[in-house]
Amino acid sequence: MGRSLAFLYGAVCYLIFFLTFLYAIGFVGNLVVPKSIDSSTTSPLGLALLVDVLLLGIFAVQHSVMARPSFKRWWAQFVPQTIERSTYVLLSSLTLILLYWQWRPMTGVLWDVENMAGRTVLWALFCIGWVIVLTGTFLINHFDLFGLRQVYLYMKRQEYTHLSFKTPFLYKFVRHPIMLGFIVAFWATPHMSTAHLLFSVATTAYILIALQLEERDLVSYHGAAYEEYRRRVPMILPFLKKK
Image 1: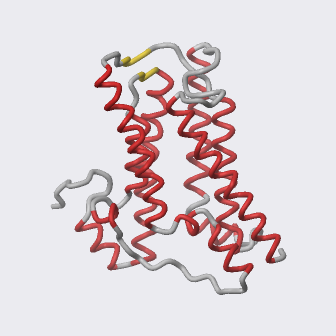
Image 2: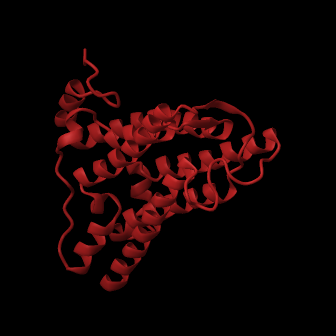
Image 3: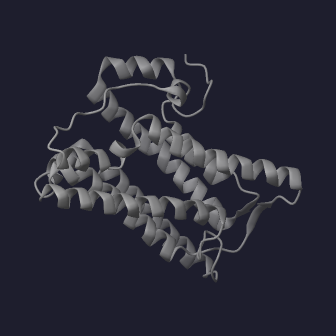
């Protein structure tokens, strides 16, 4: 693939990701977007549960399997390393778009906070969660994480170098602030419907499982430096004392 074409591909993949990310905020928060987690006509409970679980499963499998080093080595036979990250980002975005499109709301409400102070606190936590997510990506190099740095360096005929291990700001308090931000954003809502509860439980469970796999890869890649980091800093809950 030509250098300019590779950069254009990476830029388009990034744009699709960013629009998908913005839509996720509206989808989870029932804000602005044409279809959200609780909008549209509800389906029969059994069908809605089946469809939603399948959609969440598709995203989980794609997101985790393609992130594993063994898959990347196999995938390199078909996708050049320069655009491998961009392709991963694109496919992750497409699975999320499928989820937004086919998601089935469900009847039933776990809680519905009417007190203005309570609603304000929950909406503030919702916003803080998304800010933590975005901040976390920039702290470790946002553009490398989403494939733009790779295609930019290729276009400039510069060799790609892997990022060094570092623990800036939020990473001094938790090892995975991005995932912490997602959990906060998914659970902080004044209106917890059955569909939203399913989404929050499933995504939280997926995050906790996926982090075990990611931690294994990080230890394999960074060795003793990451092992020592794990001993000092909690995974998700800040200020949790390490034994």
